[in-house]
Every structure is written in structure tokens, then in C-alpha cells.
Image (cartoon, rainbow over all chains, first blue to last red; front, side, top):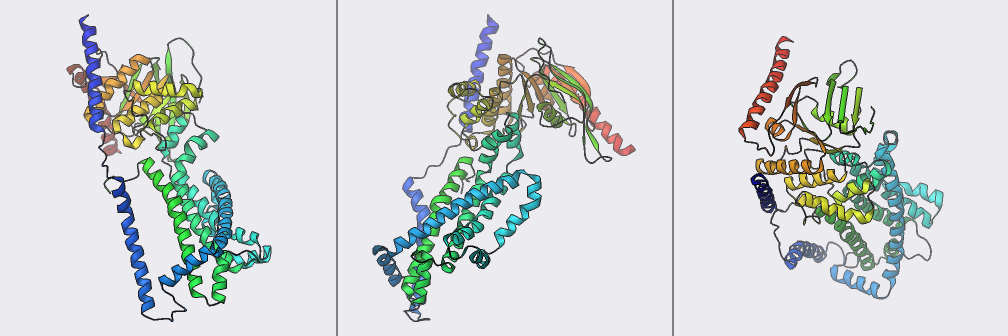
Length: 295
Length: 261
């Protein structure tokens, strides 16, 4: 009787000790307020933007170039609002964004399939691994002459070059994501019986996600650049894209319209990058515990 | 390698016969394991100790089916679970889903998974942290999640590769109690690799000493101290002293090799 009592006591003590150690081990998270967090993220950006506008205005005030060639932020932003209000820019933006969406979407499909195949097949990697990196370093604009010969001044020509620009970056991102999976996780998966397709679904793909998202981000940058180059070179009648806006403004020596379109191109690039991919990246880093709480 | 499922009543959970494993190129290869043989009874808690280079990890990988022996056979009951020094939890899943993934991979129906997951976390005293991510837990808690995940595999044999090696002394002590309790409750067979001799004596029914380069079993110490044991008890320390003496002799042998060679 005495032994069972002491055993029960032992168990109770063990549980209490374990609970105590757990309580001590739990980190106490620092909790800054939401508004403070937003403010601390926002003010450096606002300050940088303010400084940039100031430098721009300073150059204009210095009168290095006449006003009608290099207008200041005031006239450019007024023009931007005006062109937006009368529907010219929204229409152009729609055409451009549609191309970006389709082109980037195709690049994601092709790049992912390619990346996955190369990452897990030794022969394929030896055969075309370095070729993919080579493609990525090749300026997309160098593809245009051939592309125009092959497809003419068409929608296909633009999409072709956008895909060529973005797909290698996406494939490379996925390959490096797979390469950087800690071997321990792969072993843990195999021990649990994850093999073949199951291993891809439950271990390899989720583990490669950070690299893949980095690839998407880079792919987007390449796609957006290629698209602008494409729209300048391949002008299709009755398709008022942002690239066409740039070209026409230059032809008419309409500097405010030209710079308004440039500002819009910059804004779209930043918004997609930070709101879409930046957020995705942050969410993953937060989930995986890759955020330094001291920073 | 044959992976026969052994159905004979309560005999051998693991049997390793004349297993060799070589590393390096043919001609200049070294033996990681050289004709090693050992048997583990069903429900036994077996500890393996050895100095560096004794092929402890290699042996566990072979038992787990992660690698193939060059020669010899390994028979093991069912598909074993394996725990590492690092918990090896998936950072993209919550604690609960880490455990449930093991259930899912052995095709436990969906409705049953969350109930079983809760049960398993409770069994390692971690109910209430199911929604956390692995990085939010301490090292000891992560190892307990890994233990719950290993138990979720419902394996008859649990292989453990220095699972508490990276933990602080107090946490390790508590996890010894925890592991012993779970072993008693489930009746699982455990093969536990460690370089900590007292830990081996504290936990094991039997302690095997492996030689280094090549790895072989050179001594066997049955531990007949009544449970529950304590790491500091004189009995544990006494048996551990014998094991350490044997290990030192093994290490000295290599010093001789070097001077004579």
C-alpha cells in the first residue's frame, strides 16, 4: 500500500516539475502596440519618399534642363491624376496588367514544372541546370528581334518574352528551395512513410516554399521588366498599354505624360512586390520562426 | 536486406545478423560496422553506448530502413519510428498537425486524427500547445512533440539517436522519467543510442558497448536495478563505472593502434 502511494506521489511530483519547466521555458513575447508597429514600419518609407521628391524638385529648380523636358513632381502628379480621371491611364493599365497576369501565370506554371523536374532528377540537372541560370542572365531584350521574326508584332510575341524572362528565375528559386531543405526533415518524412508523391506533397514542396517564394518575387521583377521592354517594341494597334503611353509621350515630347506613366509603372512594381510577395515572405518567415525577436 | 514482419509470440523485436557497412571508395574503404550482431527482445529497453566512430547512427539508420547494409540481414517488427538529436519537426505545421501528419501518413481516417492527436499530446503532457509552431517551444518540449509524433506512427519499435543529447540536465532528467513512463504504458520496444553512460544505465534493461572502427558489440551489461531509477543513485553510478571502464579500454586500444601503426 505504501509503495503505491509513493508511486502516485512520484507521478504527481513529476507532472508538477514538468509543468514548471515548461512554464519557465516559455518565452515571454514582447508586445508592441499595433499602431506603434505600423508607424515604425511606415515612417522610414515616408521619409525616404519625401527626400526623393525633394531631390527631384531640387534638380528641377537647378534648371539643368528646361521645364518642358524635365518637369517637377507637381506637374507630373497633376498629370497622373488627370490621365487617371479621364480614363486613359486606367485603360492602358488594364491592358498591361492583363498581360503581366497571363505572362507571369504561364511563367509560374512552366517555371515550377521545370524547377521541380530539375531539382529531383540528376540527369536533368546535369543537362540543363546551368542552362536555366544562363537563360536568367540573358537580357530579355536580346530575344526580341528573333521573337518578332517568329511571332510578328503580336500579343504572343510579348507573352513569349515575358515567360522567357520570368520562368528561369522561378525555376531557379524552386531548385534552390529544394536544395536547401535540411536533410533531417527529409529523413523524418521518410521514417514516417512519406515516399514518392506523398513525400512531395507533405515534405518536399512545403519545405521548399521559402525558396519558391523568393523565386516568385524575382520572377515578378523579371516579368515586369520584360513586359515594359516588350510594350515599347511591340506596339499593337488599338491596344493602349503603358508601354505605348511611354512611346507616344516621347513622340509628342510630352514630358509630364511620359513621367506620369513612369511613376505609375514604378508604383505598380512596388505595390505588387511588397503587398503580394513581401507579405507572403514575411508570413512564411514568421511561421517558420526565422524572425529575430531582438531585431 | 529482409524486412520480415515477425509474428512469433513475444520473442525478438529486432535482430541484426552479421551486418557490415563500409564507407569510402572500394579499395580504400573503412568499415563503419563489421559483422555486427545483436538482438532486442520485444518490449525491451536496449541502450547502445560507444565512443565516436562506433557507427551508432549508421546502425540506427540501417534498422530504420534509411540505408542498406553491405552484408548481413536485419529483421525488425513492423516499421520502426526514429527520433533524432534534433526534433526534426516540420516548421510549416503547427505542433498538432506535426503529430497528425504521422497519423495521416499511415492512413488514419480524418475524423479520428484530431482526437488521436489530442490524446498523444496529452500523453507527453503537452495539451494546450497544439496551435503553436515548433519554433515557439523549448528544446525539451520539441523533443516531447517528436516523441508524440513517433508514438503516432504506432510502431512496435522506437529507435532513438541521442534524443536528449542537446538538452539541459534538469530537462533531460524529467524526460527520462517521461520516456520510462511511456515505455511502461505502451510496451514499445526501444533501442536508445547515447554517449552518456549514466543515461544508458538509468534507462536501459541492457547496455551494449560498441567498439569503434569497426563497430562491433564488445560488451554487454544487464542492468538489474529496480525502477524507477535515478541518475544519481549509487546503484546506477556503480554499474555506469563498469561500463565506463570497458569503454576506456576500447578507446585506449585505438591509441595503441596509432603508436604501433
